[in-house]
Length: 248
Ligand SMILES: NC(=O)c1ccc[n+]([C@@H]2O[C@H](COP(=O)([O-])OP(=O)(O)OC[C@H]3O[C@@H](n4cnc5c(N)ncnc54)[C@H](OP(=O)(O)O)[C@@H]3O)[C@@H](O)[C@H]2O)c1
Image (cartoon, rainbow, N blue to C red; front, top):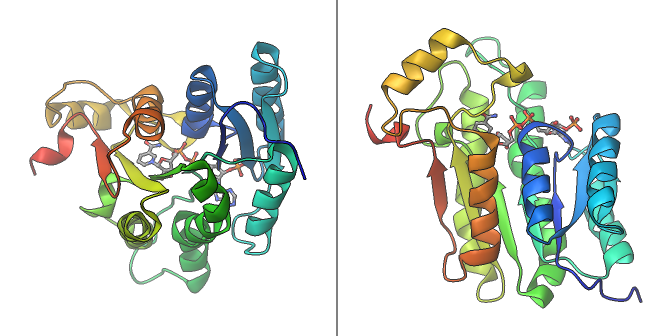
């Protein structure tokens, strides 16, 4: 049996780039060691692992997988436990995001959007539950404010995130008292491709009480709070949108 690693361990999916990488850095700085899941972004994942290892040795494990492949999900957890001997937290961050206008949406698009945004979070959580129970651990799901109020032309994405929101509440009910399950619902913090269109930003700011654009750090700090500090919070989805969703 693998000896139990001496620091808490978190698995972050889609951790190589963008919001996932900021979550990984934030949790690492707070003392978590990491299993960094990625699919295509091998170079970015390797660079991130190198950066984190230079700060603390033996603190990262790379886990490549296509989350649409159901067999890979328990295998990821097995590989993690073989390496670390413990799992304290799971962050379901990986996500596909693209438009699916009604009239041309396909089953293939349905499958891709539901695989990463709903199916994998459920089956990965299920595979992780025994270890999470043992650790009295926690799950955080990255949802989206568009799970509640739809984004035009993105029905399948919104539906998949709504399923993830429902899963958050169901698992919180089913996995207590040992495992807490919560969600973070960001407003826009990074546009696809890293571009931030200026006009969209101005329109968003006009409707945002906190009068600024959100950042990946805002999201990552909320994930850290839910994992580390929110000991009496479960089944909750925290909107991180500067208050934008308060008014229509
Ligand atoms: N960005 C925002 O403004 C925003 C707003 C609201 C909610 N969110 C949510 O916050 C989370 C992070 O957002 P983000 O914009 O940083 O995400 P992203 O860049 O769109 O996607 C994150 C990663 O998901 C991985 N991924 C997608 N499909 C996969 C699959 N089938 N198997 C394995 N990995 C897969 C990709 O990994 P590889 O690159 O390794 O292939 C990708 O880098 C997501 O859940 C997103 O829905 C983001």
